[in-house]
Length: 160
Image (cartoon, rainbow, N blue to C red; front, side, top):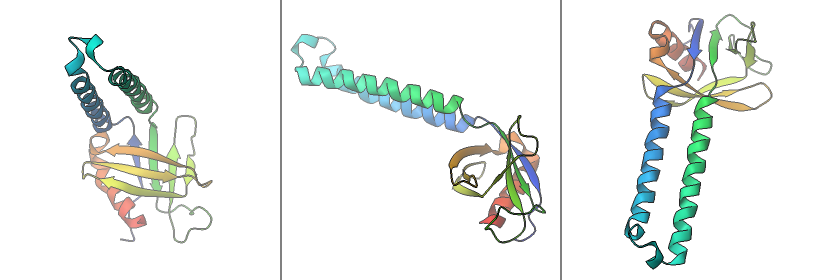
C-alpha cells in the first residue's frame, strides 16, 4: 500500500496492559499462596529453606509488583503522527516520516522506525526507534480514537 493517509493518533496508558499486569500479579500471588499453604498453620515445622524461599519469593513478588506499577505509570503519553508528505529520517528510502509528539514538543521528534510487535486488531504493541537507535514500547488502542484507527493501521502496514 503506497498511499497511506497522514494521521495523528493519541497514545496513553493502556487498560489492556494494566489488566495484563494485574493478571500476572494475581497469578504470582496465587503461586506464593500455594507455596505457603502447607506451612501456614505451623511455621515452626517448616524446613528453614522452605521458609527462606517463601519469604524471598514474597519479596520478589513485591518487587515485581512495584516495577509493574511504575512501568504502567510511566508509560509514554503523547501523539504518534504519520506524515505521508514529510521528508524521511536520513538513511531511509521513500516519502513519509513518523513523529512523536509530547506536550513539550510542538513540532514532534522524528522517529526512525515504528513497527508492530503485537497486533490484536483493537490494540497494538508498537516498537518505536529514535534516530539515535534507542527504542521504546507503546500500546495503542482503538478506543483512543476509533475514527482514526484504520488510518493508523494503514500507515503501519504501508511502512512495513
